[in-house]
Length: 455
Ligand code: NAD
Image 1 (cartoon, rainbow, N blue to C red):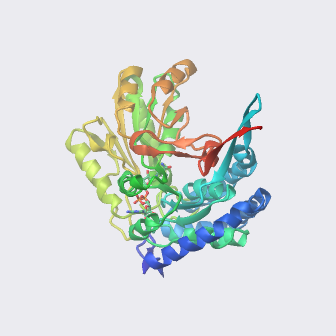
Image 2 (image 1 turned 60 degrees about the horizontal axis):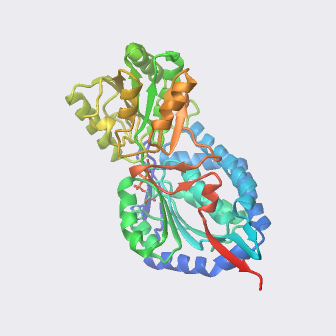
Image 3 (image 1 turned 120 degrees about the horizontal axis):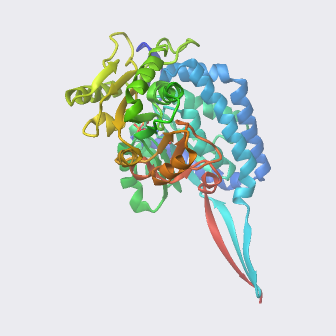
């Protein structure tokens, strides 16, 4: 049985029957059998189903947010923001799928025509993370379903109730039960799922698990996408308004208790404004309300995955041992549940884990830099490459800096931002493949090349 706990107080919410090898194989076989008919339905039918799902999210936001908050500890306002955010992404997919996968003639000369068509991959596995289950799940299952695939969706064991809610709403909206199956369980169920002869594996989670999946999938020549972690940096130049940059970056670092793949995890500040920026940043973070996630006033809730607190405490000890100044937080709160307060470290450097390893929690290191060149060098000194950005009033300098950053997404005067119109991808250990944008629709299809010669 999978025990679902409330991370805010450690109480047991419920238990779920976990899928095993047999039930996963049965779900796979049913999906395989049902997929050709789903692919053969008119696109309009699939669009209608996803449109109804989108409307159900909006209609049921309070009920869905309560479930998400109970099992992940995400503050209720942030849970509602997430659920209200998915319809905008679905709208993009609804508006863009037809054109993105339409067959197109690319050549017609002397009786020889060439055409590209897009066929669904078939049956795909969607193994998902818990931190934004609606977003990271929806980025995969919405375009995959629209393009005619069957989806075996394994929500994280830490967001399993939400996964079941998503499944229920999709089925009520007209997606056949065998076309979208929810697989319940943790790593064992995930490993069993990707052993099935699926046509694609779309994974969101940690680098460590992504690497294990890549080892399993590599020799099978199956399409593989891995959306993994980050250690996302921002550089603050001396020409900014310090208070507003600090406010924006404090939110970028601490929203969802820093448990976002694109949270700001490192800040580099030009030396002339370093002390002022650190003071303004600390003041901003001190204003964040920590508390019960069910309260509308709460900004910082508990840590969802209990063992992550050990990682955070270790990063603080390592940094302080090497000369960092601990300005806020730093140790778990002694109360039921998984609580770690917002933590700010200044005078950090790249010998410290907090500037090198993903924290995935409410902790930030702020480092002093002399100039743009040093900032760019340090921002690129990472094995990850999800997002990176710069705060400055000088657009020309911003563009020059962004062009040098090795990251899937780059930001000017903003951070921790995802757009359905832009591809979401990573460099290095942040993963391979992408979701979102029209590329993130095509990725669920196999382009087929037609060579057509008139006799
Ligand atoms: P995780 O790697 O622990 O788990 C992710 C999923 O993989 C879960 O569903 C889990 O049950 C499953 N799993 C575990 N072992 C498996 C195995 N051997 N085979 C198959 N499946 C297995 O990650 P998490 O703690 O759920 O998520 C946090 C991580 O996800 C962070 O590193 C974060 O940065 C990353 N993330 C990345 C993005 C992105 O878009 N790049 C988005 C959200 C989260």
